[in-house]
Image 1: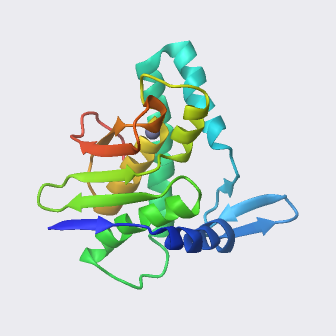
Image 2 (image 1 turned 30 degrees about the vertical axis):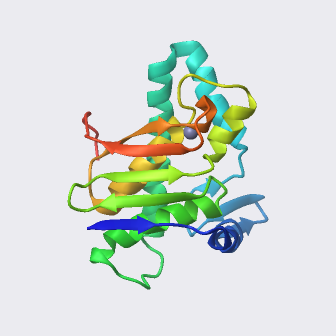
Length: 200
Ligand SMILES: [Zn+2]
């Protein structure tokens, strides 16, 4: 069975208010924000600065290791995001909550300003696809700085991998097959076989 989760433009507006306003609390003594009850502080960060993380690493260690390191940071971010969201009220339990948790991923991303996407999950084959029809915020920031020949969004690839694996209990990796920074019309992330050992 194929599951498809979309976020309309109107839902994106609603999610922005929910994710970027209602779920944020401010600690005025620290001058620091917290999100969704998580213990880690949350900061507003320019997408261009997340892109810089990749670009600078590329200059130091080259394309492949830079992408992997960016991916790993994104992975933890996605895993933790799903972990926090798993504690939200379960108003529509589907498939033991796994698919429901997966389906929350795109509204959280959209509401946080990372890009509006559609998630497609085929539970027969296990394949998962996240498509940002307008590109991710990082891809759009990268495009401002000129066209690349490699995808700009390994951080997001890691994020969707972490979110998907935490939701479904799987061990998938994700590859970015299209990226707006390369001149493609959208950013697309597709699941691939799990290739590396990981401690969790
Ligand atoms: Zn991209």
